[in-house]
Picture (tube, each protein chain N blue to C red):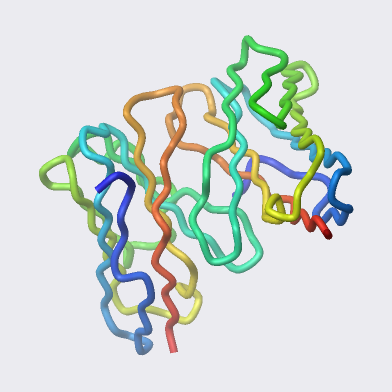
Amino acid sequence: SQQGEEDPQALSIQEGENATMNCSYKTSINNLQWYRQNSGRGLVHLILIRSNEREKHSGRLRVTLDTSKKSSSLLITASRAADTASYFCATEVTGFQKLVFGTGTRLLVSP
Amino acid sequence: GAGVSQSPRYKVAKRGQDVALRCDPISGHVSLFWYQQALGQGPEFLTYFQNEAQLDKSGLPSDRFFAERPEGSVSTLKIQRTQQEDSAVYLCASSPRRDTEAFFGQGTRLTVV
């Protein structure tokens, strides 16, 4: 079964706007990762945040992690049409090496 | 190659047929994972290898599913007597060590008819 739940399930915005996706999980983790998946393609790693970190930035991406609430958020600033994709959070559960994925957020960025 | 390579990209199998899906991980990556992704869902963990050792197979849905990585590099996921519910995209990923990003292949889309 899937560990994480993402919210919203779908998000539609205009180019230039910011997009925020949230992820909740259930168990203790080593790290939390965000991946992007374009239609018909494999998963591309975006960013990894470890359990002892609270915030991380990479280009237009900002990730926060709140281990007390077992939640994370991904912010994409100044979105582009090329950001249209499904976004998944994945947790490396403590004591295991496997990644457990959430249900995903489908992001549509319109020109 | 530079990335994780999976073959075939597409496979159509008749119900009851056996299939074998291949994964070539990034050279030197110790960890190898198999995931199953149904349409509109997130990937579901199937199994994990560290070198040639299969350390976790808790996600394999039935004893019809079998995975191996005999020399610690290439891996094969075999599905015996395929059923319609096996239709999905099968993703392979590798990583150099714990607590790092995983690199995914393009997947094999299996359709059982």
